[in-house]
Image 1 (cartoon, rainbow, N blue to C red):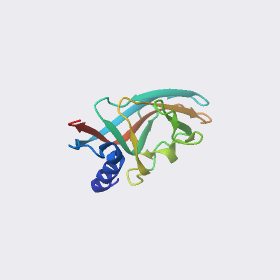
Image 2: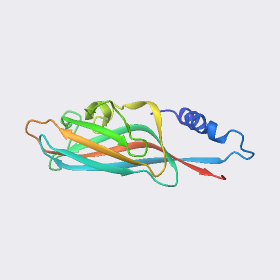
Image 3: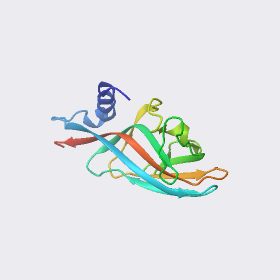
Image 4: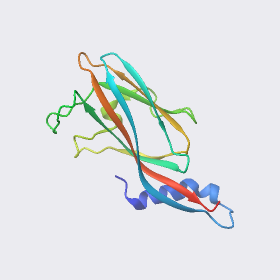
Length: 163
C-alpha cells in the first residue's frame, strides 16, 4: 500500500491548481474508504455489470483493488484460492474513461484477497470525483465453473471544507 505521506502528496498535487490564488485554502480530511460490488453467479461465458457510486461528500483516491471469489461458500486457503477466469473493464461514467484499453484478466487488475501476501497497488493513485459512478463489467471465460465475486476498491475519501 502507498505510504500515507505519498497519498497526501498526491492529494496536494491533485488539488494545487484549484487551490491556487485562493485567499484561504480549503482544509481537507482523508478517511479510509472501501467500495464494493458483488457479482453473483456468473456462469461460463456469461457477463455481468455492477455500478459503484462514489460518495457525493468527497473525492475518492483509489490505491488498490481486490477480489474474493466464492464457489458455494467453500472455505479457502492460499493453496485452494479460487482464481476465476474472468476479464473486467472499469469505466468512469462521468469521464467515460476506461481503466484498460480492453477488458483485463481479473487477477491482473486486482489482488486476490485470499492470497494476502500478493498485494497489487495501482501504479499511481487514481483520483475519482465525488458523485461519479464506476461501471464494472465482467465476462467469464471459464470452461465449466460458475463463481460469485466480491470486488473491492480500496483507498481514501477526501473531504474538503471551507470553500
